[in-house]
Length: 267
Image 1 (cartoon, helix red, strand yellow):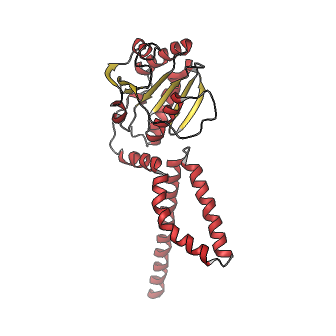
Image 2 (cartoon, one colour; image 1 turned 120 degrees about the horizontal axis):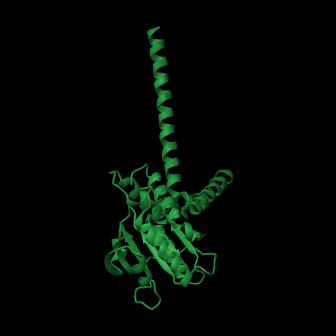
Image 3 (cartoon, helix red, strand yellow; image 1 turned 135 degrees about the vertical axis):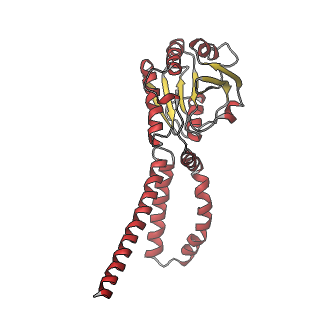
């Protein structure tokens, strides 16, 4: 009787271990999918899965020794290539995991934010004047390397200053403005250009630069088109066109708050 009971307990322990094992694997896969959701890595991952299925089918259906040898010897190279392919996503994931200490974030507050209010007012006037603008809101990922490429300002955010910076006849209108907290850190900053294909012919270098910085950081980027006066938002490697400038403050608030929410309320 005792031996039977111990055997039952052993089987129960093995069952719980299996459940825990499967649960951990499922959690890891789910977290990885959340991290790459909405990024270019999704398309790459789909291609890799399709290729793996084709290779598995061929290797197990037909007797192809040369092909099997090629596949088996290519696996080590693929293990090196995958981190290179997914480098932006891995970098963003590691940065998110590293943010374990809670800090007060300016953009999480529900009340009207003077920085975003000034950006909205400036955006309305820039749009009316057909002056292009590229405004980057620094979040958790530091942008000092891009601040160093521009003209250091460390100035309070104001409508007049933004209008002056992005005036076509000033030396600072090319490049982006980086806002750090409540101050403009620098202007005329050089941003990395995205390699993604932009279907809309009206999106030029300014949009490509805004999308590029959103691919390598968690920054929220506001882009005002010089040709059309329309506003776009770039974040997490995606760009959303034709935003209502009259509601750009609410839209920016939503992006900031969603960003904080996805980090588990850790700003």
